[in-house]
Length: 280
Image 1 (cartoon, rainbow, N blue to C red):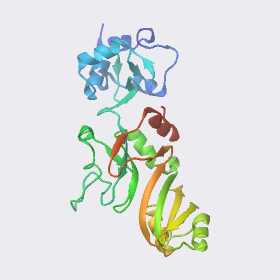
Image 2: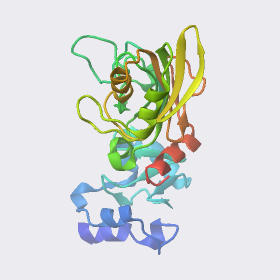
Image 3: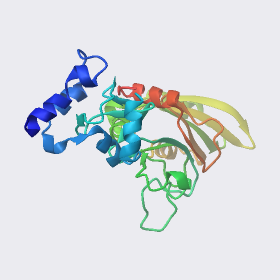
Image 4: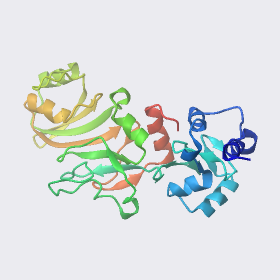
């Protein structure tokens, strides 16, 4: 039997799939890939950094591995580089297991992988167990802003979260100096044009009780304009004293301390992926 025939044989649904009649779009794509692009399932799991090939065999035989949503018990099944593999519910990326983290970004920290000025980055703030996993911040908070920031190595999710089509509403708590005139609130709620000419969608704004000569605003933004809140306040002659993102889509910052990081729960991960039309 030649190599091509062995490859076809290893894909027989009756041998490898729980439901031979249901194939996901990803599986259809995998079946069009050339044999040179494919690896045995156990080797693919090992190459993605999850475990050794021998341990992968054990997981496969135990029925803990899903390929495109189907339980697979054959380590010789050949899979392509874009095949979705899950182990005990965790989705593996090409570089290993997909990680989904929430950080409460502190002020005086930049949302980049490195900084030419030598300032601390959000990656510097990661706990040791998450370093070296090629995690990237999704979107940005500026140097003086703080709050909820997503970090992940799931490139597909990151792309969608930053794409205007899938923009998720973000809620901010903003502390400004002094009293906020009703006219400024109406302008924000009706939409405004920035000094640079950018037209903004209406912003949901609620005024919280003022203390010590300051006013707290709760603002929900539905578009992703760079430094939008600071530029809005600038044009409305409001001085921002503190700016914190407290929610993004289905995620809430909660009581996570400044500068700290935690993994998203499975329910949070599912809700986030669902919010941008990705399979959970």
